[in-house]
Amino acid sequence: MTARLFGFPRHIAHGMWTVARCLAEAGSGTGADEPGRIRSVRADFRAPVLLPSTVTYAADDTAFQVRGGSRVHLTGGVTREG
Image 1 (cartoon, one colour):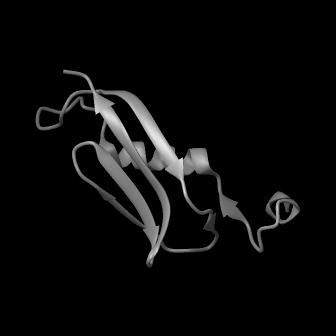
Image 2 (cartoon, helix red, strand yellow; image 1 turned 180 degrees about the vertical axis):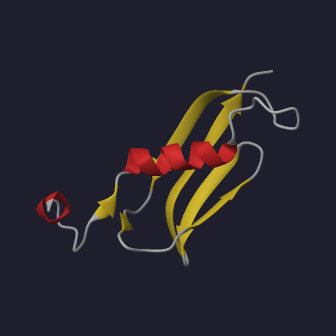
C-alpha cells in the first residue's frame, strides 16, 4: 500500500484523478447550453481524499471545490475559450 509509505492511514484518491473528475463535471463545452471549451485549469490541493469517503463537488462558472464535510480537499478554476 503506497499511501502508507507517505504517512497516510488508508488508500487515497490520486489528486490528478480528482481533478479529472471535477473537469468531467464541468463539461466539455460541446453542448448548446454549455459555455466554451476549457482552455486552462488551475488546481490547489489542500488535503488528501482518504478512501473510502464521501465528498461533495461544488462549482460555478469558473471555480470548483471538493469538500468532505467541513474539510476542503481541492479548490480550482478553469478558463474557457470565448
